[in-house]
Length: 392
Image (cartoon, rainbow, N blue to C red; front, side):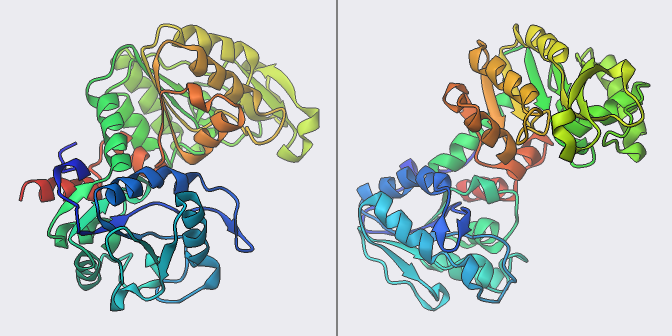
C-alpha cells in the first residue's frame, strides 16, 4: 500500500484527527460488543505517546443525515472508551464550530452522519474536518470503500494525511492475498446470493487455484450444474452467470468443487426435522441450509495442501443448530491447517469467534464491504486518497 503512516510524521504537540471505526451495537444506551473500540485503542495510544492531542471522528448506525437522533449518538462510546483508556475522553457535540483538544487529551466528536454532506462527500464539510487538526489519520478500514467527507474528502483536504495501523494492516493483508500469495491459494465464498458477490467470484477466479462456494451461492451453482435443488434458495436469473463462472474455472484450471450432500429441512423454522441428503436425492419440498459431512470431508482433503486460504461468508445458516456444522467444520479445518488463513466479513468473523477458533486464524479483517471490494479488484476511495497524499 502506497501511503504515509503515523511513523512518518512528527506528532509531538500536534492535533491529530483520526477517522476511526467504532460502529458498535448499542441497546438502551449499553454497548453490547466493544471489539471495534478496543481495536482502535493502540492507534490512539500511539498518538498520545507521541505527544499529540487526539480528535476522533466516527459514525454509528444509519441515522437520517442532518437530523440528531439520540439512539445514534456517540456519547456512550466516549464514556466507554474513557474506561478502557483509563482517562477521560471528552465529547464534542458540535465539532463543526470548533473542538477543544490539547496535547495528551482525547475528544470523540458526535456522529459524522448527523452532518449534512457527509455521505455526498461535500467539499466544504471535508475541509472543516481536515482543518480540525494538523494531521489526518485514516484508520477506519471498514468505511474505506465509501467516498464520504470524513473517509475520502478530508484526506484530500488535509495538510498531512496518513494511514493508521489498522488501515495499513488491512491493505497489506489484501495485497499479500491478491498479488503475492503463497500457493496453492484457495478462496471460500459463502452467503445467500450470487448477485451480491458476482464480481468477487469472477475476480477471484483470475487469482486462485481453488474456489469453494457455499450457502445459497452453492445452490445456484448446483442448479447451473444440472441439479434440482428442490425449494432451496436459488437465483434462477443468475444460473447463466453461474454456468459462465463454472466454465471460466474450467478454462483457467481452477478447482471449483460443489457440495455432494446437504443438510435439508422443510423450512428454516422446522430445523428440528433436518436430515442430510445427497444432492442427487432432493425432493421438491427439501430446502438446503448447510453442507453435509461428506462435502466437508472433501473440502478438508482439498484444503490440506493449501498454503493461503481466504474465507468470506459462512457455508450454512450457522446461527441455528443443526445448520452450523458445515461452517464449524470449515473453521476447524482452517484452524488446524498449515496455510495462512484470512477471514473477512462480519458473519464469518462472528462464526469463527463463536466456534472458539478465532485466535488460530492468521488474520481477521475488520472490514466486510471494504474487503469485498478489494477482492473485486477495486481501488478503495480512501486508499486512492492516501496514495495521492503520499505523492504530494
